[in-house]
Image 1 (tube, rainbow, N blue to C red):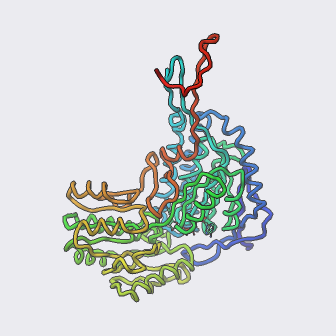
Image 2: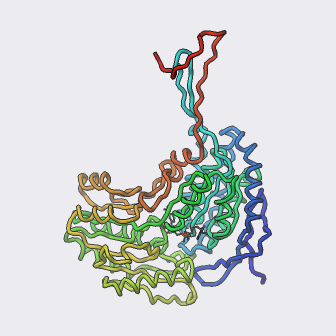
Image 3: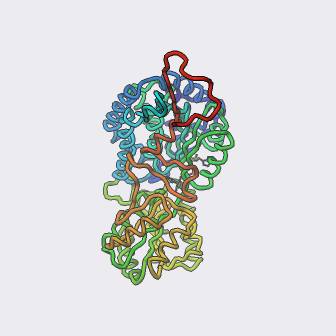
Length: 499
Ligand code: NAD
C-alpha cells in the first residue's frame, strides 16, 4: 500500500504545495511509520498567507455575532467528531484515549468561550470627557496571525490560538508540529464545514524553514508560539525584529510542594497523574516533588509502590494509564536523562528504562522512573526532561521550598499540598510562577481565564485565550468626537484640559 501523504490545508481545501520535502510520522505505540507529512516551501507559505490576507477583508467586516454563529456550528462539529479526533491524537501522539479526549475537551472549551465574542468586543464608552465631547475605545483585529505549536497537545494548543484569533476577526496560518499534524488538518476541515469562509484558517505543515518563512513574511502581523524555551526565545527575538506582535510560551520544570501537614494520599494521587499522565509530556507536568520537613520518606515509599504498578501500554488499550513517548529520538533523550541522574548521584528508586511490552516491542515505551535525593545542582533538576521521570527534592522547611521554586529558571506551573490556609495563601502570594494550584496538581486555567507562565516559560506579555487572548488578537483604537453646530471657539494652542 502506498504511504499516506499528509498535505496542507489552504483556502478551504487540501493543498499539496510545491515543495518535495517531507517528514515521517509514526505511530508511537508500534514504532511504525504511518504517513509522510509534506514540509512546505517559502512559496507555499506565501500562497497560504496571500489567501489569508484576501479572506481578512470580508471576515473582519462580519459582525461579531455572525462570526460567533460559525463558532457555534464548529463547536457542534467537534462534539460530533470527537471520537475520530481523539483517535487521530492517540495514533500520532501516543497518549491514552481518555487523556486525548480530555485535551480535545479543553480545546473545545476555548471554542465555547470564543462563541461569546460579541460580549468581549463591546468596548468602552465615556460620555462628556470634555464639554459635549464623547470618547470610546474599540478593539479591532490585527490581520493575518500565525500559530506555531508543539507536538504534545495536537488539539488543545492549536485551539488555544485559532478560535480566539478568528472570533476576533483575524485570519490564521497554523503551523502544527510535524510529529502529529493530522489533528490540525481535521479541525480545519470541520471549521470549513461549519461555514468558515475559505482562507480564514490555513494549515501549513513544516519545520524550521516554514517557521522562518512565517517570521519574515511582512503580511503576518502576529505570532503565537508554544514549544521549548530555546525556540520560544528565537521566535520572540525574530518576531520583534520583523515588527510582529508575539507571545512565545516555552518549557517548564514544575514543582509540587508537599507540606508535612498535607493529606499525603491526596498528594500522592495528584502527583502520580501530574508526573506520569501523558508520559510526562505536558508543559504542566509536575516533574519535581519538594518534600518539606519529615514527609520525604513516607512520600517516596507511597510513590514508589504506585510508580511500580503503573499500567504502561498503547493509548487505545482502555487499561493503559500511560502510553509511549512521541518518537524514538525523544525516548533516547529521556533515557539519557535517567542515566545522567544515576551518574549525578541521585537515587533511582524506580527504574522504568528496560520495560518491554509484548506485541509492542518496537513502540517508544519507557516505564515510570522515580528519583530521590535530587538536588538543585543536578542537571536532571535544572533541565526539562519531558518524560515520565519524577525527582524528589528534600527541603528543610517551607521557606527553602519557596526558594527552590523561585530560583528555578522556569515558572510555568506549581502547586502545593497543605491543610493550612495560611501556608496556601502565602505560597500563592510569594511564588514567582504564572499558574498556581493549592491542593490541585495541574492548575491549567479554564478557557475564560488565561494560560501562561513566568520567567523563561513565556516571552512576551500576554497569556493564551481568555481575556488576554482577546487583547493579544486585537489592537486598541480610541475615538474622541464632538458634533458642534457652527464655530464655537477660537483656535486653541494649549493642550486641551478639562476646566
Ligand atoms: P519544539 O520547540 O521542538 O517545537 C515547537 C514548534 O517549533 C514545532 O512546531 C516545531 O516544528 C517548531 N520548531 C522546532 N525547532 C525549530 C527551530 N529550530 N526553529 C524554528 N521552529 C522550530 O517543542 P516540542 O518538542 O514540539 O514540544 C515540547 C516543548 O513544548 C516542551 O518544552 C514543553 O514544555 C513545551 N510546551 C510548553 C507549553 C506552555 O504552555 N508553556 C505547552 C506545551 C508544550
